[in-house]
Image (cartoon, rainbow, N blue to C red):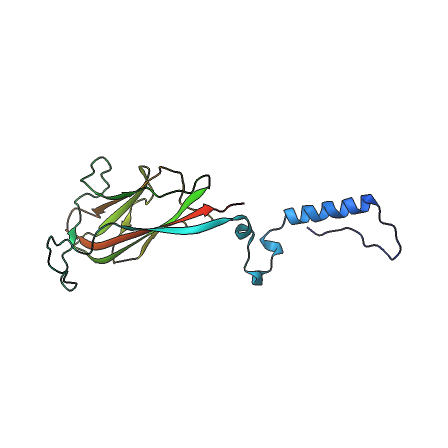
Length: 207
């Protein structure tokens, strides 16, 4: 949109109608301001102007550095790994089946909050025909589709193509995130250790 308010010559009288027209056109122009009216060099998009959120993260330990049951000092060169459960899908009805961890993030009061992404990393993993798989749930609803299949240590990300513009899910007080561990098939015995997750959130800022 182009502002079409006429210019005035020296000594010309400016009426209230002229001022109202100018103000109205400026208001309309500013309201319609979008990416096309902002310089690419400015580093500012209309989404950023509207996205008044702060970002925070929550680290979660899912499996310890070793499966050893000993009081001896840890031997970092010879750590025992955890054998992945035989399940090829999450067992949400049995807490001793595939469940690794359930976390209840503290959501800021009266502020819209969204889960932006989940990142996963393992200190060590081992493929044995099949691979370790991690499934992520929000309040019992699967977020990760077929799960994160660990063909290497990672990191593995659960997020949308534009994670901050299109977060995974809205969060409210009392919501929880669950992590489940299994394997990609029933032929091998994959192992893993030192498994951790980082939850990234964005919360609405104060006006």
